[in-house]
Length: 152
Image (cartoon, rainbow, N blue to C red):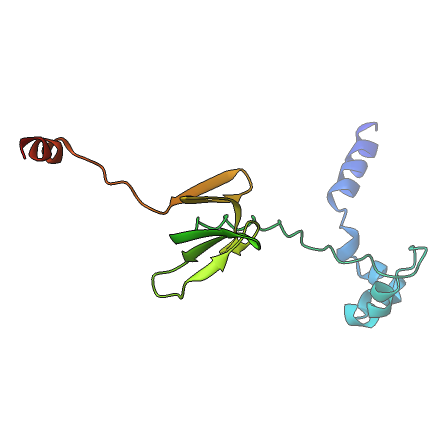
């Protein structure tokens, strides 16, 4: 006799049908047959949110763009330096096709500032970098040229 309650319990466990498939459960819940589109207001105004507003949409975090590289030093030709009552000016040609222009200390040429004007050279600076342009570029004397000059 003890076997019959165990067998009956085993038969009940084997015949268990999940709740979703039981038609009696679907009949008991009238909302189960409704399409989800009818519940859009619940999504738009959540019941259990204090503000009754949907959660904010997450924003995509944009990484900051790297700063542009610093400008290259200008390629100027120093044509002359003039010192008079109005101060010191350097006469330069920023590009080969440009007109000659007078520049003073502090002037900006292609992102570089003139930091110093000396009698035969001009010094540009940007941040911690500097570039010097001389009025008369010295020619490098090679050993061949030096020998030829010595033989004359």
